Length: 270
Image 1 (cartoon, rainbow, N blue to C red):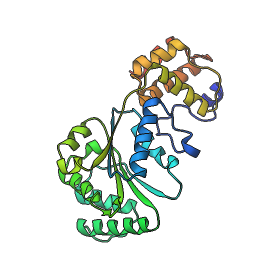
Image 2: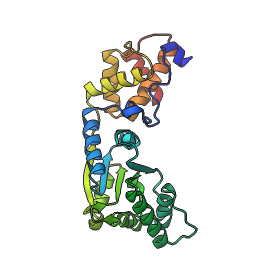
Image 3: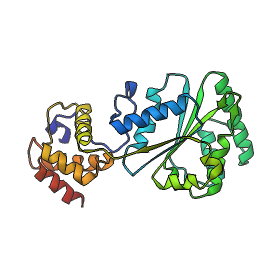
């Protein structure tokens, strides 16, 4: 009923990070996200070693890294995402090994890291670069776990790093890494993603609506402003507010989302 009422082919404001489209067509390229993407591509393609991406909850960090493969030359890069890094050092290393399909029947970190090194070197010999993304890195509390990640950046050839390690997290990650001098020295690129401004909030809303199959305007300018003020320009919050506004619009049997409906949605969201 929701989709039929508005004329959508799919829910427009799902909070699941946008999956890769052809050429990253599902990735909204605001000025700040475009800059973040270009910096990230530079770091990966020129093997800068460590990359740190920080931003507030819901700013689009995970969406950025999930769409990374769509912008890389096909067949030249192998991107592996770790989404639950709150592990003991040994388990974190094992999780990375499993992601790389490294077979291991031991809990020895040294053995697993050695096998990871061998796997990465084999791939490099085949012309495939390895990229490891650790999402929610700010939740890693154990300094030893961060030291293990640093060890991955010691896997190098004469031409440089054989692994690009991308650490993604909320702002506290910056201070955490800065205090760890050996790891901090290996961070070749630091990327901060800021919230959207009002203009790009409106563009983001239209982008999501169009990707869902709707070309006609749905939100009034006043409604879009109310969404922006309440969300602070964070895509995750924009999604929540817009989705609830569309639901209330359905229940009110309207074809246009006004500021009044957005205010109802905000009250409903609490």
